[in-house]
Amino acid sequence: DSGVTQTPKHLITATGQRVTLRCSPRSGDLSVYWYQQSLDQGLQFLIQYYNGEERAKGNILERFSAQQFPDLHSELNLSSLELGDSALYFCASSVGAGVYNEQFFGPGTRLTVL
Amino acid sequence: AQSVSQHNHHVILSEAASLELGCNYSYGGTVNLFWYVQYPGQHLQLLLKYFSGDPLVKGIKGFEAEFIKSKFSFNLRKPSVQWSDTAEYFCAVNARTDKLIFGTGTRLQVFP
Image (cartoon, rainbow over all chains, first blue to last red; front, side, top):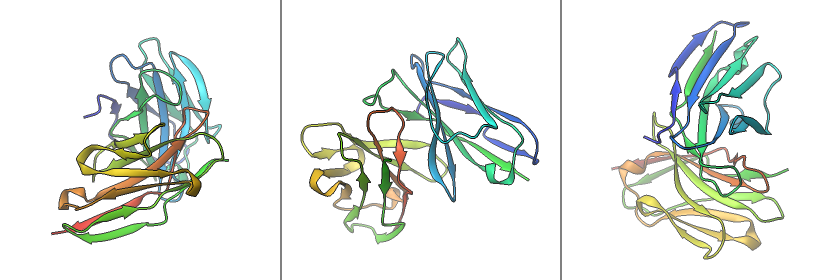
């Protein structure tokens, strides 16, 4: 158990819908990262927040957005869902920001879009 | 752009066999290198990491990796695998930014 929690574990929804994935970082961690793992794209970085502010952005679609709240938990919002958005979404957290911070991964949310 | 290549997509070994998984990255500057493992149904766990210093890095569960700068490689090794090592292994790199760039992963199956 890494100490990072993600809810829900599984999510099944239809195309065109909107979902929210939630991540609670390890106690004391200020950075939260979101990654998408799909069969065709592998593990890809989406976005990072540090202490409530967006710090880095990767291959995140405009239909996707995220935020980090004052209690440091983060939510990833996916809208106008398409079949291709079906994937495992991982959240990771680290104590601080910077390249030397070890990232601890949560168990992931498996999203299935039908 | 940075990228990571893992050439072995699927490796099948018998218990007690030696393991070497290849990882090559493309980036000309200073990099930090990582190996993560994902056991079936579980989250990614860090096996080992290299930031600087001794290029031979020892990690958990008897794994080690060697950073060879001239070859842009960071291969993972284990002298004797066990059935419990069955998992997917990911090499990752970061450089200048916090985000991890992952390879496509290598699925390892170990048979008793």
